[in-house]
Amino acid sequence: MNCNLVCFETCHVLISTTFTRIHASGMTKPKIPNYFTIHGLWPTNFSSPWPQSCAEKPADYFKRSSIDTLQNGLNHYWPNLKSAETNMELWIEEWEKHGTCSLQKFNQSEYFRQAISITEFLDILVVFKNVGIIPHRTKTYSLIDIVNAIKETKTRQVEPELVCFQDRSDVLLREIRVCLDANLAEYISCPINRSKGVILCKTKSNAIKIPV
Image (cartoon, rainbow, N blue to C red; front, side, top):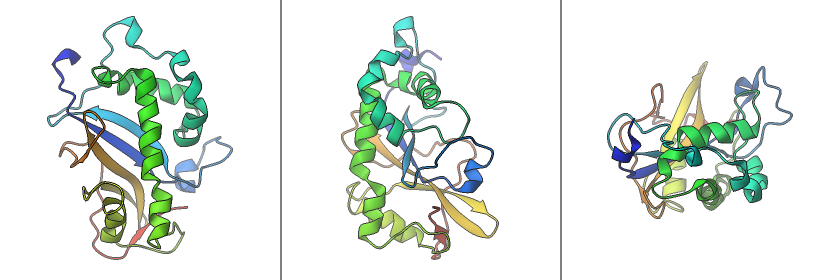
């Protein structure tokens, strides 16, 4: 792909929920965080497919020195929870697959710094706690209550996307996705195009569990 032709129009911020033991099975991670972590910060556009792997010269590739001052924050907010690879290997993959497509706007250090900053601002657990939504193994919440908690306090009435998955008879919240404009200044509605296999939460009953 010639990424000079890709218009950096919007940014998909993927905020993962805590991971259940279903996700963690077979993993060697010493501890699964009990808070919301980053899945990714993905530059995208309003067409399909999304831009990926936009490096055009050696200087575009991951440089460890660019995140030296950010590693504590990245280890906390952006740990690798889905494989046996290290956090560093995850960050390399995320930068080279997605972050390089943001180079029209942000360098590597700014890209990771923005991801941390957005996550800290959203502070999803506190948002939920303030309206009585508490992650629990058996308690369920309605889709509208979860969405409203975020859009009324953080995203200026722009609805986030909620991604769920089915675990037997339970509907579990898997991801919260918010989209921002190209400058990461304003929340906007997410583009219709999305990753293959993504299942948005559609249940209208009080039946969504937030896993712990």
